[in-house]
Length: 236
Image (cartoon, rainbow, N blue to C red; front, side):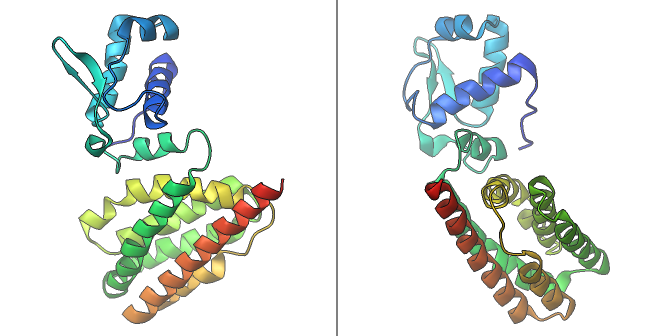
């Protein structure tokens, strides 16, 4: 599902309600007080209903006659939706979610690298090289570093030429962006280029085992980087 366009009062209303639900302020099973929300946000009933439609499409709320609009059980939420992931980071880094993200990456990306070693085209390799160049040029600019890292991992998924793996881009990118902001937003950190270059070198050599190993080592480094970032935050 395409990510929600965050614009104006409508977008703010969607996000405000979503955050309250995802943080548990409005628990699963609770019925929403539509009149109170309408007054609080200063929006029309039509505008509020449009906002709730966005959350309904993501499995977060539902409406029934006599019961009204209520929060669905977490098991019904589309947790792979990019917006749902992003909203969970709204109040700051969510360590449990970061750990879950790493588990997903550890399952998907080494296998994706192995597959890409047999399927990557010259265009795919050029895209990966371009992301490496952007990574090197970021030189301490957190926004540029995050953008380059996202470009690299997007290009890797594309290089598998498996459309289902490519669709994992939304999940990977949203969570990865939050992880990168935590890591790159602090003090000096290790150069990310060598670990990423090792993956590209293995792809270029068509070495499946080396590609998978290089990706596992990159992910291990990613965990260490997050731990360092947490340490910096804790000492401040």
